[in-house]
Length: 318
Image (cartoon, rainbow, N blue to C red; front, side, top):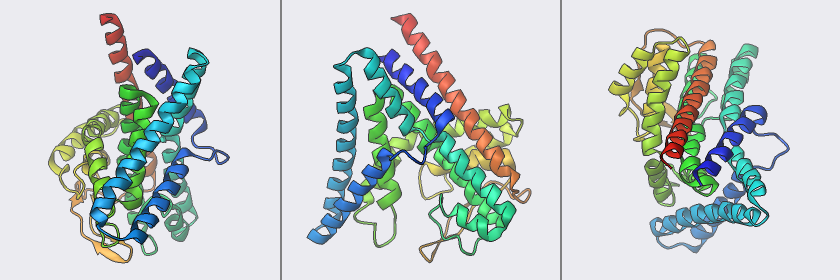
């Protein structure tokens, strides 16, 4: 079982690096998103206690997604081990988003080269905040924050859960992450219907977020950046966020790059006050986006190396 999980994850990582998320592929996350939208509308139309309905929305989305992934693996297994491994590898590939994250981030850097308005439009694809009035510095910081945060959500967490429970557990996590990105807000519209989704995402990312922060500190050192400052800022500022998880990776990135992230931003036209993360030692630059992407890839490689060592050790014990 562990060997198959590992082989599928290894193949999935390779496919993600080679192909990313092709435009022609109708991604399973789109199906999950459509279900969430449909279910949310039905629950709101029915009325009643939205906080109670939120639990149904969260549980049904996660369980149905895990069941679908598990069923695909089971049915392919009826044809033999090789077909099952192929299906598991494809599900692992679609559950990872390292290359997609890198492409979107570098796309912001390239857009800024064409002008600030282009950079604002591009960064709006990957952040939830209002981007129409962002300065170039704020666009760069928003991109770095997104790369750091999604190193956890889009790479390290799926790798961890894919290794622990195969594609079914990986996609249960992906469903939780999609729920959080769609309804897990604290504003008046989503506070009731999204509370359980936000709590579940916090729970599932609790360990991976702290692991990602440490991996980014090591990655900073490997990339020739300030790994010591990354660790120091992570220890100091990991609580400087409304989420219990996000600031671990963001603080590591801020320390490695000697920049300051966080602060107050507009969301849906309203200011949301956030603490700052890191020291304002220098102004962020466009090239810092590529450095953040480089750290993300290095942290992903370190995670895969850790998993490989763990599988080797378990195989030896067996």
